[in-house]
Length: 161
Image (cartoon, rainbow, N blue to C red; front, side, top):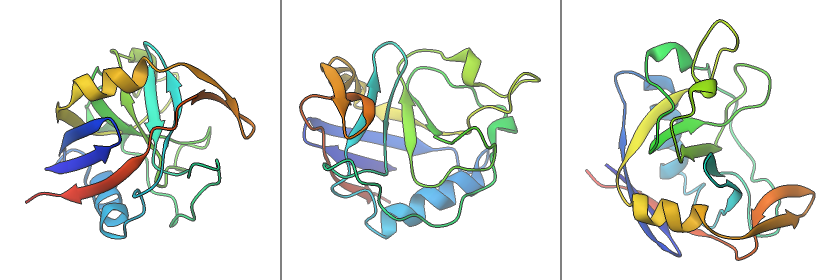
């Protein structure tokens, strides 16, 4: 179990180790490195998703390791409460950023139209915290859109085994 401690409460996450081993190992390594501590939820789009894992409060990106192979074809779906790797239009471009789906986002699933976004876990407790973050007013900051007007910080991410 993983705990994402935010300034609004804790989000507990179960990883899909068997279905997304590359994404899970990548995520765990970032947790062990303390990469997420002090990062923010930098993109919040109501009724879609909240994204984090790579920027600090000044909207500067943290350095990352090399990108990983996209596991979107693992059979998992981008349903409410699942975690998926964020990426650029390049299929195998995910590094540290991830998002939590606020609803079933079928258009993000693996298909013939698009390779999709790799789901690697799900929120087991703390969707109330996710929903609080999702409801925050957003605006533009540092050249980015949909940034919460009140900074939402990840205080720490821990592996609870």
